[in-house]
Length: 507
Ligand SMILES: [Ca+2]
Image 1 (cartoon, rainbow, N blue to C red):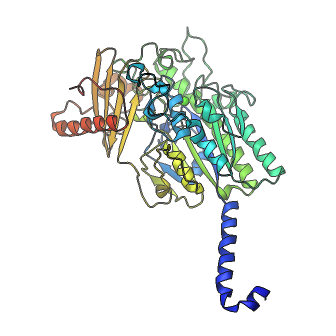
Image 2: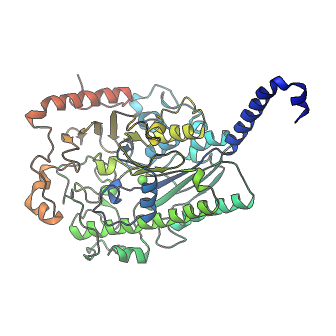
């Protein structure tokens, strides 16, 4: 019995309680969760079996992560004002801000405030309010590996340990293994120095972004070759993945970005959309994606051996999706689900197992990891925390989703989704292309168009669409729904400070 208790017996309970609370606070400080944020570069959710059971891609590590954690069916990137869709996507991830609030480049010169050095919507000290800066201030050790460029350099510089390099080769030194090696050296150093601070690791890959130079063994598994000869087509091989079920040999109208690199200059594809080219290219993509899975496995194994896995939130996603033959497109500059959506898996303490809609943007990650780590995010962060979804208390945090592609001719493309309904509009090439698409994603999840119903396409992709799986925008039955979605799009454009308007939005 202590002297304190002898002298103050009646206060014993109170003092003991105070001491207990004090100790508990110390404990929670030391026990703050680690964050491992894993980002693939250019990956459609539908490449992965958990989003398309027919996919040939084998990712056992991600499959295990998904079975032990939560898989999101409604995770989106908000869009892009540049052909380099990576750039705004990564700005949004780093700052937790919406598309028209992240960079001066997003606002056309004629619409900027006269003399203003930066957009009205971009705080001057934004890099100080980004992921690593916030977590550094909260006492976290921050580490990052990723590709170089097409990113938010001001935010990237804030990571205490940083090893960025673009690694798109087919060997350990030149490919995805290099990124995993950087994370493993950080963890080895941490183990050696017995560092107990919580960590935030930003584990980015340079793949499966093109050129999709896979490792030989993995390429062979998917029947693919690193095709470099523009004058010939790659060989067909039965091991190659089949054509996507929403494949088209050409998009029905121009996408609005003439000369777009991703649609005309990608090594191995160029302007070809034939079966051999697309199947070989998907095989290359899968070879790169399986390698990513292997590399994630190495890092998770290390965390487990260190006893850190249980206290780590693991996020797996991509900066945006990808077409590779779907809808006759090749790149990331469109707003179909394969490209607007991203894969999204989370595992960690208190995360319920299963599937959820979520309706989140990548920009919600920052607010959410702050929430999970007990950090108050700065006012600049526009994320909505989806912690309640991770804990199984809610299915979704957003009713309405907005998407933009504005990197080619203006105003470009816009999309809006609410429930099962989705609208996409195109106003490009100086008014030469003005198109509206209305889909019911429950009835037509692949966003099939009338072109998918052509006999030649059905023969090629082996998929017979149902009669109603069409763009419903011109169907009089859905006139009211169309008007509702058009109004919703305009209200989202205004709410998010989209500086453009479409032909039929101008009064
Ligand atoms: Ca990308």
